[in-house]
Every structure is written in structure tokens, then in C-alpha cells.
Image (tube, rainbow, N blue to C red; front, side, top):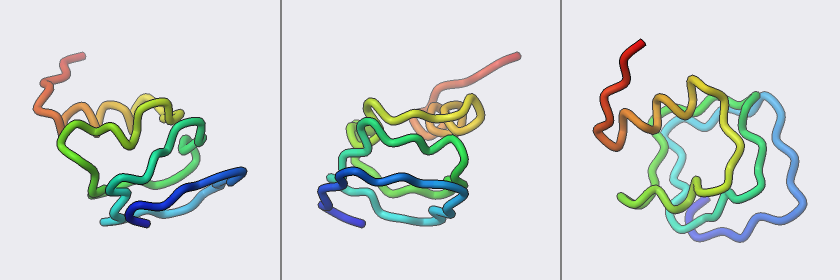
Length: 71
């Protein structure tokens, strides 16, 4: 899914394992019901800007940025 333009798409319980979203904007997409693992994006993570994620998905992406999360 590299360098795609996504419009009027609804995702439900989809699996994205090792999926390349390189230069594919996910703005406005609800990914909360999807499984995300090993996504390939730019270092700036610009592809996920504006995407709706669950708490656990957001924490996993934050770890990818090197952020340490404590409870």
C-alpha cells in the first residue's frame, strides 16, 4: 500500500502485518478495530497523522519512535 491515495474507505477487523504505508496518508481512517504490527512508514510517522488509533496501537507506535511509556 505504498504511495496510495485512500478515499472513502472503511476498515473493520483488518490485519496489517508488515504492511508498507510508505507515503500513504491515513488521515481520517479509523484503525481501532484493525491489527497493526510491523508497519513500514517514514521515520517522521507522517502517514499516521490524523488516523484514529486505539490506546494500545498508539503506544506501540510511540515505542517505535523511542518513547518510553510507564504506567
